[in-house]
Every structure is written in structure tokens, then in C-alpha cells.
Amino acid sequence: MDWLERIAKLRQWTRSGARAPHKPLLLLYALGRFQDDADGSLRYTAVEQDLQRLLTEYGPPNKTTPAYPFHHLVSDGVWEVRTDRGSASPGSGIRDLRETGATGQLAPDLRAALRREPDLLGRMARLLLDLHFPPSLHRELCEADSLELELAEAEQLSAIRRQRDRRMRELVLTAYEYRCAFCGYDGRIAAMPVGLEAAHVRWWAFGGPDDIENGLCLCSLHHVLFDKGVLGLGDDQRILVSQRFVGHSPAARDHVIALAGRPLIGPQPGARPVAAVHYDWHARQVFHGEPRPATA
Image 1 (cartoon, rainbow, N blue to C red):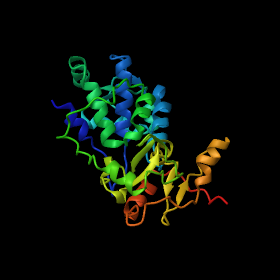
Image 2: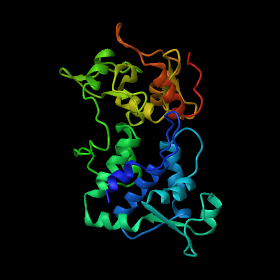
Image 3: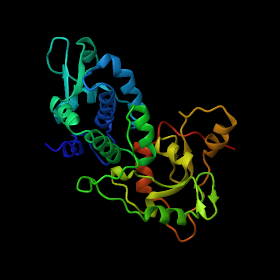
């Protein structure tokens, strides 16, 4: 059985590029727990808060519940659910899972394969990360799920996932003249830029192309905040800051809150700006809550 192919083909609700990372987040969490205790099961009531936190922080802006993936992942053949009475999953209702003492665990065949092939867990986790999340969040997700992975290790999974265009970074940084489009940061060591990255507006994992119209040059801080939905981009190419972001320090005010309503820095004349189809996707699928009013 090709477990990587099965992971790549998880049944997910999709419509117009909508994000539905519920099952991938549950699987990443379960793989992290498997590393710690290969025989342990996850009682829903014990992990519900952890799973809800992951969905809130890394899922789409709309409200959702961990009960959904806990029940429906069974249909993909990689997960099993049992109750205190020994029966199968009682359904996707929170109350059903709580009252029946439902527990979940990686499917027996998958657990056996993970024991036989020590590197399979890392390959599965990296595939889930690549297919559903931008690289700026990979390390943070591993830490949140207690996954011990070497993220720099090269993988040969080209038959399962499409390949990135390695020219993307240079094209985007050149278009924005090696300055963060949000704050103007342009740090270098000798001739080499440091802390500047090419951010996909529409995530590569969700069909975002590797071109200038889908890219922003951002400093490392603003790249992560952009990918977590704290920052966004409005119709007039002005920066959006989520009302859900809270920060009282001068640094939080100066580097985040004060960006509300500011125009982007760049791109340089002749370079194409971010296309509406891409920043509209980001506003629907990544940006959290309502934007703050522009600062004076």
C-alpha cells in the first residue's frame, strides 16, 4: 500500500480554492503523538482543546470544530475511532464524541508500516506540510504538533506534488527592489540580502502560481504574519491589519498595528502588482476577522 499516495489524496471539502486543512492538522497531531507513544490512542475529550487551537490558529477564518476531522478521517483508511462500548465512531457531533468516550488512533496497518519503515513518518509529515501549508509555517507547525523532523532534508516526491519554480524568489525580490513591501526593511550582509523572502499571496499549496503577480517581497516577520492572517492586502493595494491582533508593546504597535491602511512599498515601475484574484483569495481563506481602520 502506498501510504504517501493515500495521504496526498485525503478526501476534503473543496470549492473555489477554499482551504479545508482539518484532516491534515489532525494527522500531523497524531503523527507527533505517535512519535512519543506508538501504542497510545487519543481520547477526544483529552485532545479536543489542542485540536481546536490548531484549527483556530492554522485553519481558515470561518468557525470550525475538531469533531469533524476526528470522525470523517476514518473514511480515508488512515484513522480509526472507537468508543467505550467498542463500537465505531458515533458521528461527527461534539456531544456524541464526548459522551461515548470516543478515542482515535492511526489505522493498524498504518501503525505497522510506520514501525517497519522508520523514515515513513517524516515523509508523510513533510508531504502534509507541503500540500496544505506555506513553508513559513512548517517549523512552527512541527513545534505545535511536537513533531521531530529535519525539514531541510530533500525529498523525492515529485510524482505526488508539483515542483516550485526556483526563479520565483529572485524575480519577486527584484521587482520590489529588495525591500519589504510592508515596512521597507532592506538588510544585507555585504551584497547578500538577509531576512527577506518571496511570499506567495495565494498559497502555492492551493494553486498559487510562481510569478510576480502572486508574490510579495516581505521581511521574515511580516511574511509569517501575512501567512497567519494577521496581515492582508486590500483592493487599493493597501495593507490590512486584523482587529483580532493584540499587541501593547511599542514594537507591536510600530511594526504591526501602524501598518493599517499604508500603501505597499513597490513594486518598481514596470513590474506587475499583485493580481486581485490572488489577494481576494488571501482575504477569504487566510486573513482573520475584520481589518483595523487606517492609522493616522
